[in-house]
Length: 137
Image (tube, rainbow, N blue to C red):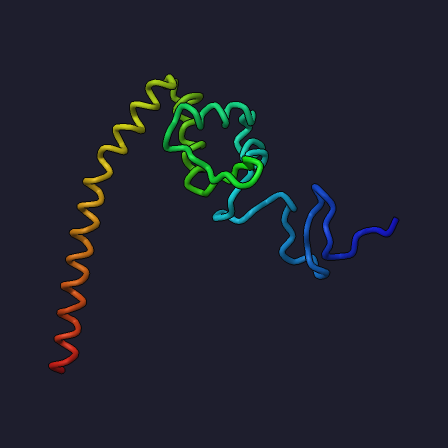
């Protein structure tokens, strides 16, 4: 058997170029990358069956499912799992308590959407004022 080359990787090894710069664990992903249920389980220390159970209890937690029901967790799903884990296991909330908290936050979301619309209106009026100023000057 031929050993892997300098930029090849073996499971669990460090990936690096020939100079050794940019070394990082092969399992490390970019912050915005999707994660499988196994990767999320390893990152959070939660068993996979708990993550699947939470999907049935928290409608906000909906990972993408591809062929064969393979789950892909988006960065916002990962953040939600970490938040649910903190609320349940560190802060002492019950499943029902976390459900209520997340549902209440979801109800308040339209207010933040209205706020964003107001910010957009101010931004547009400022852009118009700048355009007028540039046309005059």
